[in-house]
Length: 406
Ligand SMILES: C=C(O[C@H]1C=CC=C(C(=O)O)[C@@H]1O)C(=O)O
Image (spheres, rainbow, N blue to C red):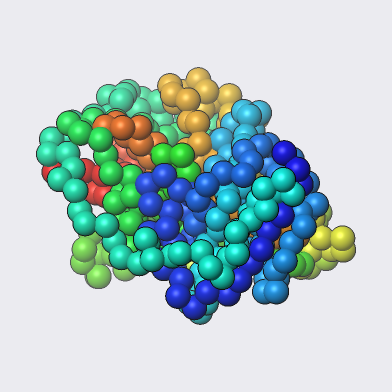
């Protein structure tokens, strides 16, 4: 393969990137922030190799904003030592927060890209007509709920014995349909039903995550770690009480603070300025409410690239625990399944080291008629296993609701 060659053009006629991604393309985006869809594959490679390839690309990009020009998109696994890869798509469609749209075509010196101003976008102008889809679904907790609450009990005992401060334990739920699941329809429902979340689709790994791991635009960096959850009950008064309960609960505050401290400490060495909200904000999703704290900073010069920032933070205590090594060991022992990309990082990088990565939660891997959905909770010394189980059920509802449509 020769070096990368890329061309970008503004396209006021941009269709919804969610539609462009369909079921077999790549998607990462949040309606009010930005959305990128990729189709075709010029290269599939390790993230650090992708950063080098992008940086060396020959680019015609009159827009030159974060995320225009050639990009790589992907989902990195939870386990920091597991092999990771990202994809450089041949066609990138990017919509900015103001609705502005750009198309980038990517090729190589041997096979130059097409004219981005002339790419036919009409195939994605409207949603495809709905197919019949599956009519029967079997949904099962891979491990009995009681086995999971036992594991939570064992984790709290270890935490109380001083072996670690916090660990995130997750559940796996299997969905088996009587026909192939329609990934494109699932992704559309996620993007439209959870507009405040980062919707993603990478090789059948789909989800809508509320949690920003880290974003870099030039020398500006931002993260929004989350920890502390209350299921929503559909009654504003009860929901407000639940949020007040979260804020007042020493256990939830501790779970939250552990996560904020780790993100702050992880970013600090790269920053000339870094600050976080003095009090957690409340992020309200259709199914749950979270405590979240925005961390913002300015990177020192030369600014670290997005992959360096991701590597410094991932896995945060929002998905792993503290200390990290003890939490990884406890997860391996108590959880009973391979997380794969669940609780990893999903997002994109451009040729300048900019990018946005979300924590890959509220998600499922879909393969033909089968899906595996995941949700986990932060456990501290006085966590109550039964309450934690209820919390995982509320979190799972988001992804199960878009998968199971008989
Ligand atoms: C690990 C997950 O959520 C994390 C993010 C927000 C709140 C969390 C909690 O309250 O436990 C989790 O740390 C998940 O949804 O699988």
